[in-house]
Image 1 (cartoon, rainbow, N blue to C red):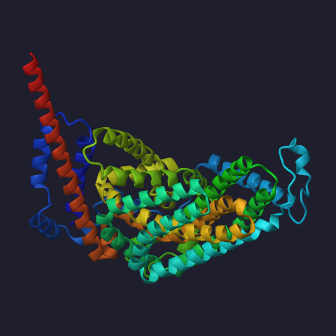
Image 2: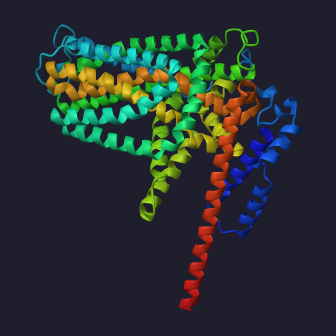
Length: 536
């Protein structure tokens, strides 16, 4: 079965590289048609491979040999040190600024006498930091509670909770948009209404993929649930994030209490929100790297029996993530999340465009641009970082080439795990932001939008820290499936069979699309030739 999957994958790779270009050659159709007719897609071919390959031989099929797998004792070089220094410098500067802004309005207006350095930029206002700080305390408490609760519910009944998050997010966005219009926040009302529409369209476009997504998520959740050390590590990072959020919200509350204009407040909040997003992404990706290293060890040791596992696997993964690989994590955290979100949306839109050639051309341009960026910034890089200690760009490039060369990219593109978990993260952020905004409306109605939007970001980061454990397990499963399918087969033979069957279906689907593209191109050439002949 392993050999069948890989030969099928090579067939899809030929289609993917040649079929998406201008397919002018008549040779491609005959060559691929012959290869497909002899490929092991049929049940008889699969059974012949199963009988011909023994377990020991099948385990040798893959890109990386067992001797190349990482060892917990392997020494590693420090990677992307420049970005490590940039991130640490950013933390120091932002932390200092937050302390200054918070203390300046704590219990006494303009305690540090900042106004004399602003040349009248600040207005005379008597707001205090402690007036706004409790609102963020509510957002942080709600976000931490939802993150822990969401993770526990995922582990107990993953399918039901994920289905609920997919459908509930659209409804919640629509309700929030109505509340914004009622509160005369027309900009935010339009923004949330547009988000609800896009969310609904995206769910409709991927509705056929959800059963497979739920299958993969269920197996990942079962794997994570068996490792309480990972759950404790995630709780520790949530606590660490709460400590940073205490300082961050203290400084932001001081900014809201300052007598600064609306435009100035928004620019400052935007700058500090970008900083918070980067910090939250770094912590999430540290958890990602830790989980990836442990999951890989589980798959190597046939399901992770305690007697076979190396000592302290979580600690070893954590040590690498916060030392030699920390710079790579800081670098990738700046761009990966935004590029991944764009890719989800563009893929969903592209799959539903009909015969509108102009719109299809524009979306295809965006699609290929984002696909180029994904080659250098993708979440699968963190698995390579955790396993081999590479720098970020090499890890991202190697992971993407591994998927494309084996055909597993077709499976990754079909899977919606990241999008579904992101929906749960956004839902948690919306609940946190709503709680803080409703309270703010009664106390300081002019600051509702500012407090609500920043509180939503806080909630998303806290819930995302809990969700990243499951997403990391899914990511690691795909990387291991691409590197050596025998690892998945030994871990769970039934799940391996389902992955192989779905991969087979996606490769056949891609080959059919490429043949259709070739046929359409030929018809276009014939019509053009006929038109030229008629004109002559």
